[in-house]
Length: 108
Image (cartoon, rainbow, N blue to C red; front, side, top):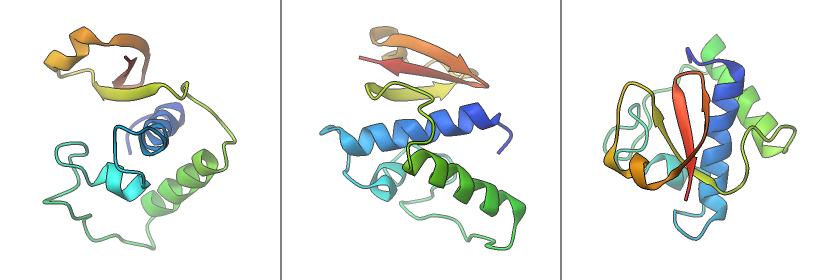
């Protein structure tokens, strides 16, 4: 949760965009649980959640803001992103849209 709010909302937008596209699972959990998409997911399972933590409260608030469409950090055709400290080969064939915090976002 070290990313700025704008970056966290952008990641949430990518998850929502993917679920709306025909290229990924149609649920947010399905998108997040896909292999090699989020480092905190292990073998398709979420870690134990401390529901009393500040991080959980913040994550829920970000999810609500994104779900209600109160902000659109990125256009709906942005389906890919990665951290700026890695350079995946697929990034070269996509169109870079924006860098927010430590993440770079792309569209086809």
